[in-house]
Figure 1 (cartoon, rainbow, N blue to C red):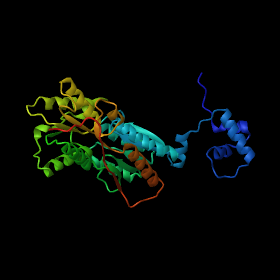
Figure 2 (spheres, rainbow, N blue to C red):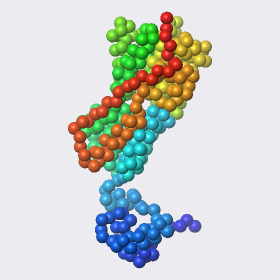
Figure 3 (spheres, one colour):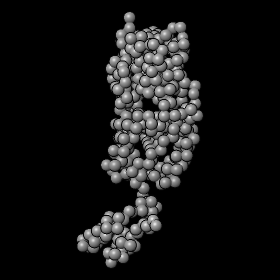
Figure 4 (cartoon, rainbow, N blue to C red):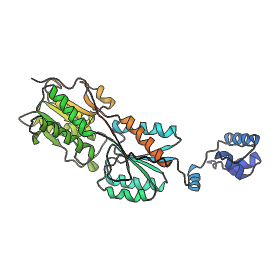
Length: 348
């Protein structure tokens, strides 16, 4: 038979104390209780393996110590690093993290918004992929503090922890040009979120400023709907699929910029299977600087995004908002850094 959970009534009976006194001691109340009785109550609670009913306590105090986090894909190391940064700051401040993985599905993201509100979380960190930004106003009116991370959200009450994707793509193309490349392709999943659009603008801006006419044949944008085809290997398979489209052309580029490292790994894999050696025949540069980028052969040249630091900044900002510590600064934009490895070579 499963044992019934221990309650404060059980502890009160064994400690010969009132229920209200036990409640005050176990909730660390400032109400005066003698040192001897306090020690006795805690000893009994430990002996009985008492587990506090945090949900019940939160309902009474309306003070949740849980923050919600919504990301598109926890299987992507980019978001895993970001969540680790969030968890570090949350733990230091006594908060727990309720993690929601949308699997790149906007409908599932909307469901998680409602679920987190029902669970009475006081704050939310979200990397949103939804095009329906107007829904956010409802949750803000309910008192939910929101910090957007990675993907910007167009709302005056939302604090933003972002990254300069446009500058990052510009920096990547500049590096390729310094190695002699002028035939530069861009491979990306759908241009349906601010990060990828920013990269695309950085790519085209550099080409135009360098006197290079952008070629549509070298701009490979996935038409696959991620919410319908998403899997843990989506980015990798998408890189392979779009690389095949490049290989099928008569005029190959000399370099490829991929929208993230997993896509770049897929590109390199497809090139290898078709006898195209990286970087001897074609150079490849990624975006994110996940740990995998230095483990593959050749090690991937990539644009570093401070994912862990972004997570820490987002959680620190959210906790300040929950505590009522307002700030006039609504947006923090992290800056890119190029990490040079072995996947880019000079071209003649």
